[in-house]
Image (cartoon, rainbow, N blue to C red):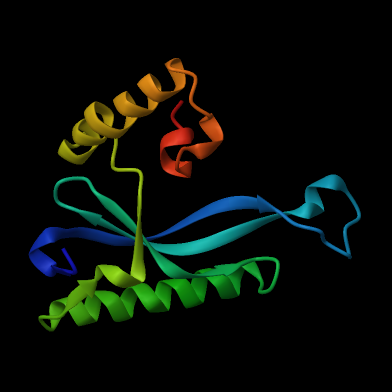
Length: 135
């Protein structure tokens, strides 16, 4: 699958996660934590993709990050509304929506294989971030 059309996309939304960085202006330990803002697309079967483009609050204000990501979402929505599609080559697969069809496939497939791999003495550091975060 390279392209995903509007009928397959449930929603496109802003997502974020925290990260640690060396803040030269830090006055307290919490000042070393930033927020990374991204665009996430959710598909009808529960698969989720995160756009490679995103903005860190360590380089831009939180408000500017949110505004720019929301503007990108509006552009993507307009593109889909005009008959365009998402080129999955610009997105990375992330964990599926819990309880969805995609989650069930993920749980039966990747998580089961990873658990067996670890039980057999495999190195947990060799697992993908998505799988490792569940084990």
